Length: 296
Image (cartoon, rainbow, N blue to C red; front, top):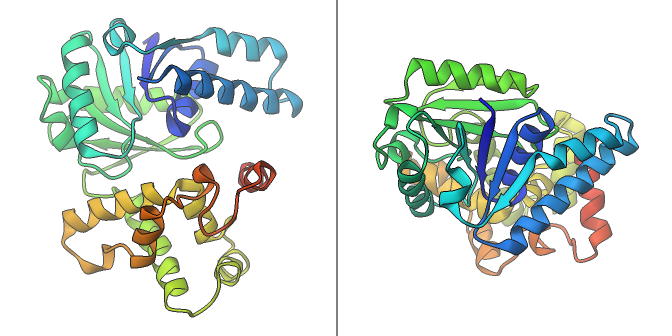
């Protein structure tokens, strides 16, 4: 496996592209927006600069990694020679189904089609393709170059060979793959999102303030980042989407999003990415400080 196409140049997409390129793969980074592609590659370059400064890699390693990445706005051209395609678009079912219909049509017959979805059914996504046995979930954690875990989710029809291949491939990236079954939220978000939602409920009910809730969880539960700060880092819109997927999938009120979360997303207060969430990131330095704290 030499060529890996990554669809989506946002936070997860550029992190996945970075990780594969640094491991020696030829990466085709695809996005409909030329601006998003330039921003994504600049993010990769900035993160590589940090690694050079910490003497984890050399300048030559940085150059080699960037040379492994080619950008495309044309999906058909981008996936044409890929052995593996990793979709990392927005957590939206209709968008993902549309993308998978297209890559199924344009990709090599032998290509493995993976999705970085954090909650949506792999079986449902695979059903729109002609080769559901070659569709699998690869749920990377953010920030991708740093975090070791990859949830490997096999759909109902995913073959044993594809699962074994992706498990082995994840290890070559320096990751720890964990195979889980295809249920809403899988393992990571089925456990994490109710905790974040309950933290928002605790704030909504006036039990304590933002700083107090996060301090209790950091000092009392040894969490590296408080739940409200983590929700900001993930993106409140992403948290809402995942909770909605789980609520629709399980029909259980414990997954119902807190009204405060719903209203904040409606108001465009999405966390770090929008400049304001539970914390104020209006100054770039503030957002940067939060991100660096998590990356330590």
